Image 1 (tube, rainbow, N blue to C red):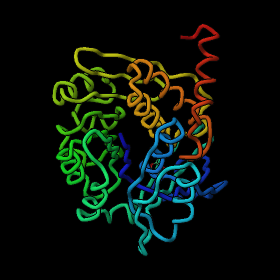
Image 2 (image 1 turned 180 degrees about the vertical axis):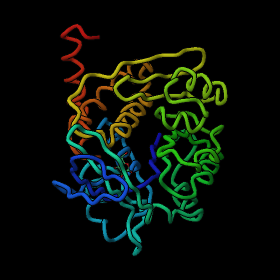
Image 3 (image 1 turned 60 degrees about the vertical axis):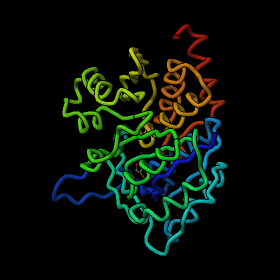
Image 4 (image 1 turned 90 degrees about the vertical axis):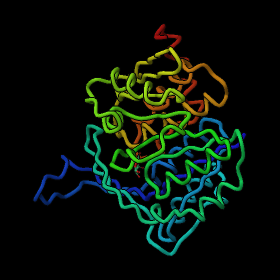
Length: 305
Ligand code: RIB
């Protein structure tokens, strides 16, 4: 079984700010750091750090090639399918406050240059039973989903960020849907303050899929078949929440591919995400498997689980 992340690569420009910029305000930031990011890249790195063998497909501009492909290569992600273009790369402007809050402004750049011909070329390398992991930061998503489904690949979708495009995706083709309450509200129209209702609604509409709803510090819930499971979040000193969801997704999918029980997968993924929020940056904040296992063991030894 092969695993493909077909997704975005962004150069993250992270500005440390006292508070989020207000309309009409000019604000001096206290620090600027550059990190490799993009939900696709972050999830590919999380999959690899959690122990999966993973290939990445996507398009990067020459301007950020060294930063982005360097990070993937260093972690051991297969980058042979990634395209390099003369056009500007995707990037993100991230405001990060001292209490760990962030907001993100995206520029799609080369992430929006994915076309059907490139998707066809990438998918020739995969077959029935292989796993495809997608987010909502690249072009041609509906086409990629349809072609992957025709091939018999298992489709994992993290419909993030939430925008009008996620309403047009062929969600009936998805095998595992991982989303947060904001994305849940966008898909169902149910308030993000009613996560149980969101989960029920998604489960009724897409009964073929395992649905995982992540709730930040309130943990995560999963609906599959007749079961609903939940897992609390592990306490963390929050420094930067960027890529917490990507870390969760990477770890959860690795555990499911290794045929672990969903409860186990939720627990491992939640612990990985809680370690990620205690560190700065996107993919650089994703913990390695031995760190996650050690942290879980500590909690178990303390009688926490
Ligand atoms: O999920 C975090 C990511 O969202 C960042 O790395 C940024 O690039 C945006 O894609």
